Length: 463
Image (cartoon, rainbow, N blue to C red; front, side):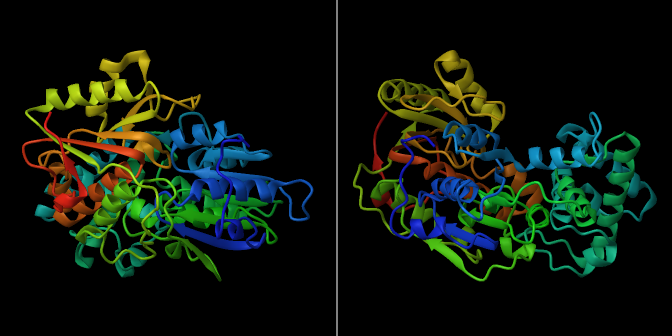
């Protein structure tokens, strides 16, 4: 592997030599070195000279992170996203064909058609007037938990939709919408979507009596894997193989209140890492304050970090006159610091990302799913909070932290305030904890309620 990868220290070394058979879980806070540990764990399990050696697969959820991990060049280890693994396995089993996976746009269209079809033959109800995203997320939840019958759906404890739980009396109607969606999708030649493909992989593996291709599977950023994804990976290893789970539930942004526990893994011992090796004490304190806010309460397996020793400047908070001034300050700061440090401008969504893409052009690297090459060292990066998962930068600049931008009001309208605060609060936690030494926060008008009000956490600077 690359020589600049940090060497495991203290308790980290224990993780490398966890049992080479069975299921293990490593839970840690942001900056505790989980990705580094996952890489070393993969290298250890794949080492040809060791008696436990075998084909080793390192999986993560984020394509940008895959590019970074491949840059670090772990020897004898295959690095992929879960969905690349899933497509490859189903193709090997003759269960894939060209263009058989439903993309998000088609999926939304099919779900909309399904809602209208069920509404047309059902009793009038306000339920059908809920935003499309509500139905889309509920279908995702059903698939993510491997639910395959109405009876199972009605009885299951619905964990995840915090503020807008779906009552049991409405679940038969919701399940009818799901079945209608599947009927429409199948008629259009789409066998899977990105949410139910894990169910098909798990079912196929249960029927597959052939030798497993991989002996060891390591899951990085495992908090973003659905229970059904994890079940399928548990079925993908032989009896003498291993499944190693690395995660931080505080950074769970693709699903809510899902845990490796939901997948039914048999884990006799867990390893917890509280030490933060990435952030300065001041940045870590802001991250810790965010993790103590109400939208982080009652999260299972949450690991509270200890404050790091490295000292630095307080996060800089700048109130701007308008959005244009935020963009101007972000660009000026990035261009200045990018000469000698790695700098990332991170935003909530693609519309905001395009503002910086057009302004920076070829002079910066966009963090996105098709990124093929990772350039280490000084330079400017830009992308969404999602795209930055698992990465770190010397300087992080977060514009558009206005109350009207965060939390997302459209999402709150469809899912409820508590859900909206939880989702965007975790996203902001991810963004804040990407910064190693310097953090710049920009806003106009009123500051988002997702940031702590404690003024001692910031240094306010006039633009």
